[in-house]
Image 1 (spheres, rainbow, N blue to C red):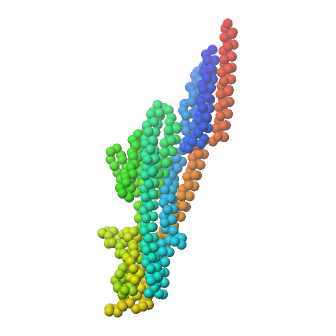
Image 2: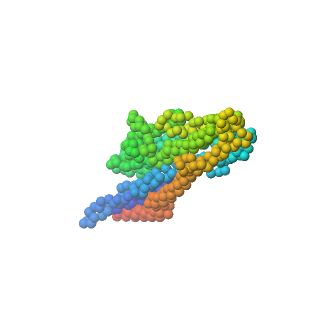
Length: 472
C-alpha cells in the first residue's frame, strides 16, 4: 500500500503542477497586448527521490518559482535609445514652429528689407514726390513691424515650451513616486522568496519613460531596488524615497528645481536629458541665439540707414534727422544691439522729412530733383555691412538656413531613433514577449499532462480499490 500512496501523491502533484502551468499560460495570453509585459513560465522542480526496496523512486513535482523572460542588456539598450528618442521628439514641435517663424516664403523678413530699399529706389527716380516719400515711411514701418512680429513669435515659442514643461512635470513626478512604491513592494515580496514579476515589468517600463522624458539613468542594488538619477547625478529615487521636480515660474522665466528631502537644487541643462533637454536647449540656447542675430540685423539696418539719412536733407532742407529711432544703449556687458529688433521704429512723422537729397551748404536750400542721398541709402541694401561678409539679405538667409538645418537634422535623427527603438522593441518582444502560437502549443502540452495525471490518479484509485476488496 505504501507504494500506491506514493504513486497517488506523485499523481496529485502532477495534477497541481499542470493546473498551475495552465493558469500561468492563461495569464500570458490575457496580457498579450499589455505594454511592457514579460512572458512568465513555471519553473518545475522534482521532489527528492526516496529509497524503496533498493531503488530511488521519485515523489512527484512542484512549481518552485514563476519566472519572467527578461534580458537585462536589451532592457538597458531600450532605456538608452529612449533618451535619444525623447531628445529629438522634444525638439520636433518647437523647431517646426521656428521654421514657420523664419520662413522662406514671399512674405518673409528678407522681402520686407528688399521692399524698404526698393521704395528708396523709386524715390530716387522722383525725389520730390510725396507719394514716393510716404511709401518709404510705410515700408520702414512695415519692416519694423516684421521685426516686432518675429520677436513676439520667438517669445511665444518660448512660452509654449514652458507650458509643455509644466504640463509634463506632474506626470514625471507621479512616475518617480510609483518607482519608489514599486521598490518597496518588490522588496517585501521577494524577501519572502517569491517573485514580483508584474511589479518588475511595470518598474522597467516607468524607467524607460523617465529615460525618454529626463534622460534618467538607473541601476539596481543588492536588495533589488532600482535607483534613478538625472544625467548629472542628482537623485530621483533612492530606495523607497522619491524626490520631486518643481517648475518655478518667475515672470516669463521658468526654472526646474529638485526637492530632495528638504533641500532644493536647481536643475540646469547639464542635469537634463531626453525630452526635457531638447525643450530647454531650444528655449535657452537656440531661440536666444536667433533672437540675438535678429537684433543684430535690426541694429545694423538702423545704424547704417540713420547714418546715411542724417547726412542728407529733407524737402525742408533740415539735416541730421534719424530715419529710425536709435536703439537705447544697454548697460555693459550686453551687446549694443540688445533688444534692437523689439525697439526698432520709424522716427519720421512727415514725408517732407525724408532725406532724399544731399545736405546743402547753408544758406543754400535743397535743389529740386536732388536724389543723391536716396541713391546712397539704396546702395546700403546690397552693401556688405555685417561681419565684413554679409549684406542684410544674406545675414537673414543664414538665420533661416540655421533653422532649416536644425529641423532637417532633427527629422533625420528622430527617424533614426524611431527605427532603433523599433528594432530593440522587436528584439525585446522576441525574447520576452508573448507569442500566441507558443502559448497554444504549451497549453496543449499541459492540457495533455493534466489529462494524463487525472488518468494516472484514476488508475491508482482503482488499484487501491482492488486491494481493499482482496483484504475483505
